[in-house]
Image 1 (cartoon, rainbow, N blue to C red):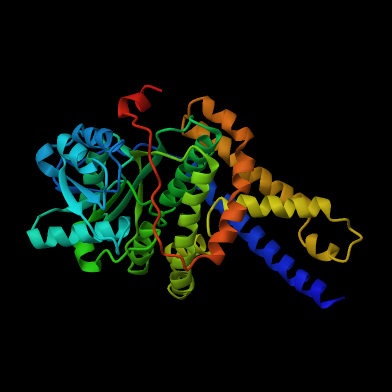
Image 2: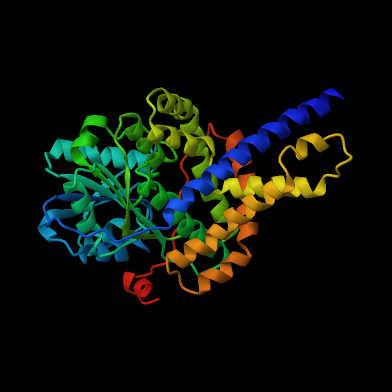
Length: 415
């Protein structure tokens, strides 16, 4: 056997073992996402919130977000809306003021991006002696369900320190790209986040719809200024023994790109940040999980180990393709067929059929099911995204995703 064949053998073995184990692991975990019972809110409004919105040139979408916050079923005396107009060259600050937010203009061409803007805002709070119990963060293109702050108040009163709200999509049916992203989120919310909440494991932070105890923030510091500031902060919490929890009924709606190039650029940024975070935290988390017999830390390390949960589908489908396309008489037969074809077929079927199951459990509009036809094509685009991100993971330059859809909350709720 030649050296090249030997190298291919090793690569195929590693790919099969890695993909097979992670695929089965995800299937086993996702079963626990089937059950959801709406948790009753038992605590009266008590906590005071600082609602922080980092925004860069978002005058098209910031108004509806502030209006949805103003409509919260929570006493207005117990929350303040702080809009960070971060290096803006449009009318974001003016629109924010007109809709009733406190606007903070920030101009710093060197430290650009959401993470730096949040860090700067927290320093402003410290300097001004603002007294808040918790900080809530939203992206400028979001819309927020009226119960959001009431549910976060209840979670804080129960003793939780870091809470991630449900991540919905406000424009799921615009194009095949936006509906594919929406299906990914519906699946993730139910079969990943809710499953781990039911197992009392850590959820992954999504960057928006995030509530953090202010005392914990002052103690830890934000110190998350990379391309995936949410992931960085969540990992640091788990390392300290603070478990971020999932609030399935506290809903936030996010705008998703409608064309494949914009989606590609957005996901590339996510993946670059993911790889950078994994480089620094993956092995320490897994080691701590084993040494301390902590499933929470070990599972968090597993999340960093597989760069993105939907990459599992790409890899397992690739394995199945290799299994079917490689003749059993070739030199790599014993490698591509290390695990039987039936195994790869079963894993792919189980993983893919979790998608319509998630749509059913989440009571998604019937139009969402039509998106399943093109979903495999979208999932396969994770392959080149991940490959490029791996080789450009040193990139720390933040790029802005343009938002265009000025949708109001009532339009979503009437669907």
